[in-house]
Image (tube, rainbow over all chains, first blue to last red; front, top):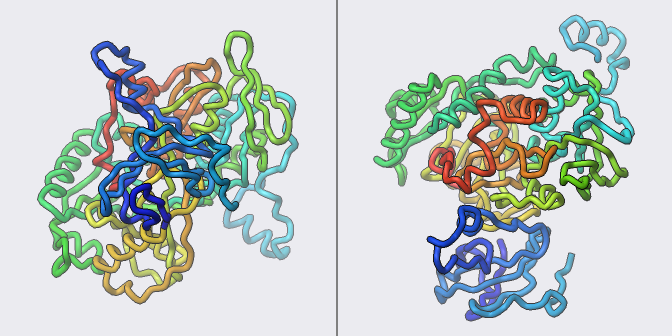
Length: 99
Length: 416
């Protein structure tokens, strides 16, 4: 089970959280003006990164807040967590995990 | 290829079984091939086999990052069925099921296909309505599936506890042509048969790049064992499909999740069929070695680690113990994870890509094993003809752009 560092509450077990998929996927402001490709890209296409992945989590059984995280999908180590609205921390500034 | 038969077994038994050959060669990669399959699982090896057998493409290679049988082909729970809801899916999965029925003879390799029946339990009124709808849709598509009352379900599987549990069993859908097969025998059987037709199976050969010519078409693959030319490349890389396709600049509507399974210590034959429960989330069968084979759900998050959280497997075991209290004292022997590529509509992609000469067979998510022969057969057809077969024509990448989804999210035996 993952240990996730909620930016509001601190480290809590994974069971308290709900995963929210890839982070920073913005809904187009005016869907009617999107091409089919742009709308499908928003709905379905994802990076599915092997390596560092920016993703959303919600501390559902805690503070209830959404937040974002950087996680390495090759070893599931969290590199950073940060609040919604903040930019993802630069990779050289976050601690590299033990491997 | 040394053919297997009762006679050959007897003859080599007389010489102490010392003169069996390896089942496939370990060739060095050639500089160029007519077609290359990336990914040496059942789907990839099968595609190479059908390219050689049915389309007369003999200069074919299969590149495998690890070893044959080490990926998802050896990590699934071996369940085979074809009772999917949509017409497109029923055609695809039943094509595979019909091929399973003759596969051991075709490959001269016993894949231990056993049509012991697959039972899907209904625990709520909603389940009952959904499964009855499936039964009717399947029968309209000439796929066998029948509704069993609680008593009929217990007659098929006497161990099943239907009452006095948190979610009592109200009935079940049962496909008697469904069952199991030995999964690593499928990989080995296809590898051996493809090798006998001249296919080079190259293990420990990770693909690191895809080279394209001035027109954008596929030209060669950069691999851990050097540059290999090919004008046709088929990718069957399961959870790593996004990673491989990204090398050619193609993004896919897929996400990769860990899916876990576990087996118990072996016991005498006790479990007559496959039982699945979507609502309380478990599936179970017994292998011919005697182990109870138990499937858990996917973990919540995308990952490439081939392992998941213990709470996910514990959850599946709690459901098993509820349905089959006599298994409460069984000990679990091994557990593992595989990385599955889940598509938004839970249906696969078997299609051409925007890159000429590059084909993809992916998106099987949590249920690719059952489709192995059909998927391999149709993928080989698509590569050989440079256009999809009628059965896999709806399973494109573009269906997500065009809104022609083949929604099987509710049809998965277990909610993932």
